[in-house]
Length: 101
Image 1 (cartoon, rainbow, N blue to C red):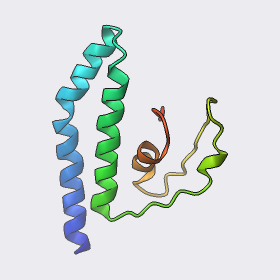
Image 2: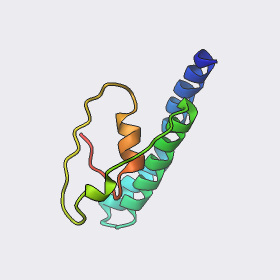
Image 3: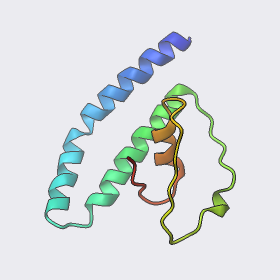
Image 4: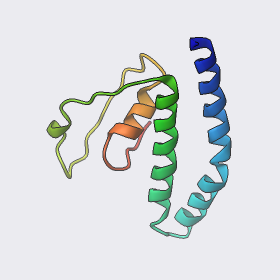
């Protein structure tokens, strides 16, 4: 079962990214034109993609301590990249549009 789940995960990962190209190009055009609608479009597409990756992988997430994140201030999160789920977790569990490096 794990083998098939892994195959499905990689198929979705690559297929969804390819399918998002038109929306991301639209967001680039909006951003270049100075339209504020670009950021929510990007956030919605990336968060949906990340949530689906976690769901397909069977990941269950429990977040504790979110109330300790200061509101209205810049915060740096430094994931240690022990696995493939750092970016999808950051995209789905943090409020606001995160900037990732």
